[in-house]
Image: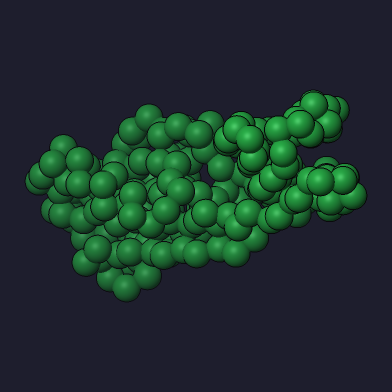
Length: 205
């Protein structure tokens, strides 16, 4: 399989996991996300649920070809929480995920080494509790054509097993299709060479 053509992620939030270290409790969660704006919305309910907890540390990664990520220590010593969590996202090679670890202090200081190890373990257990799936990196195209050419277009969509993302079928038709990256140039040329049919690349959202 072309490694540039697929990525790993999770489809559903994981079950809550609990990891204990010297009376400190670490609750781990994994969520699928598509944009950074979702993070606050996902962490808010956790803050309500764990209103006595001291720290809500997290890391996320979004994107396939270009990746954005952030690690947040939420008041723990620098790089003792967010980065160990992010390290697990990297080690499982997943993207479009948010991993949150909520900590209740148990009265015994763990030290930076202990914190790093505990946050890493809680993140690892949370990711292991989630189901990791492999998805293809898709390219989206917009095909525009007159209604009379509908059959021609549909035949190719069917033959090439293309996914229809959205369609507007009127006098002037527009169909947005998705195809996996490695087939994209073939699909583009196929439609591009057809008479009275135009195809253009749709940028990823």
